[in-house]
Length: 153
Image 1 (cartoon, rainbow, N blue to C red):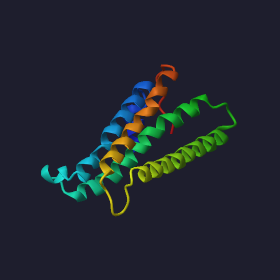
Image 2: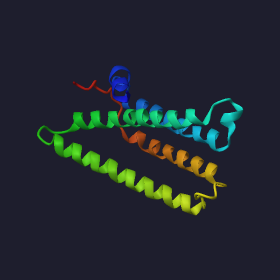
Image 3: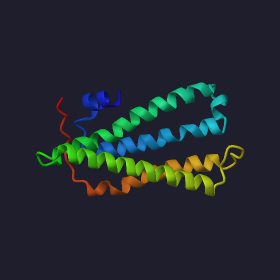
């Protein structure tokens, strides 16, 4: 769904604007679990099941929307003949980032003493993890302004 949405709606949006908006929306949506953790969802008449099902779908689509412009930009900048190598490098970097992110999240979870029997700092953990999603926005000024080209099918 995210790839189709990107190709039809977002492929012509300037890269900086797109990345800023997607990351900002992802961070805002990342705060939704706070409603579940604080049980505010029940006060708003939103069942727990809606969060369980909705969160997975939202994360999948948001992930696709976040990665598409990077792959499109890489395809535009890639010299002919090394496309597979560049794609493998990008995937390796994404996997490395995921590994670092997971371990850093586990370390912060340990520091805040959140575990299977103690959730007293879970709200703070969610807050810190989501605010850290704003860190990549510091790098956006390094990108030059340009329109993205629609990916060719």
